[in-house]
Length: 240
Image 1: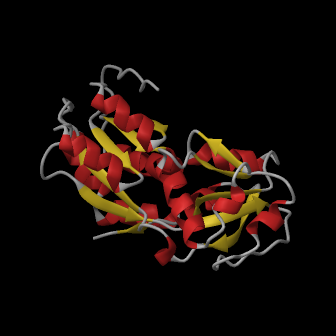
Image 2 (image 1 turned 180 degrees about the horizontal axis):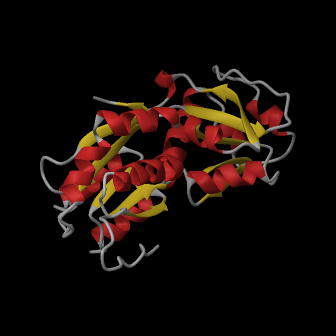
């Protein structure tokens, strides 16, 4: 995935987790209303974006859906020391098409496989994408992961998993609560307890490749009370 080529006069280039699309666009609009050039936003799986930055790709800020991919960039000197923040928190849910009447309570041994009725469970790739890794942890904690062998629809990012359920290509999916709130064609039918997986903490940092004079100011804006109010509207929990 290549980020958009910055245009003359454009704001800083932000590579961000796919699950941040609506909220980060709203924050970018708010920043622009303060008479700044609107940031250029590119969304994909955190794993894809981190690899792009590690390979020397352009970026001013990186917003990861987990700590691990930010760790990998920090270890190779790709982020500016002192600019990293544990930024937003989220929750993990099970979704079904909006017309579904199904309800599931994720507890050890809960009947997720039976609820699929032979279909597949849509989720981001559990081998690399944060939403998929959180999902696998939760399903392992609930002791249903092994039974799901062969019934996982692996998507390139959490929004692709969301789309599979929204269009009826998969009967159920595991996504962030914020994704479910953004898509009227799905509904949440179960919420994983926070203790069933690694805490979902989005990380934000400025990259060492950053050259835009507004990059640090926009990073600080994303940590401000004004931006926190925006992210709360989209279901995130800002961490202060």
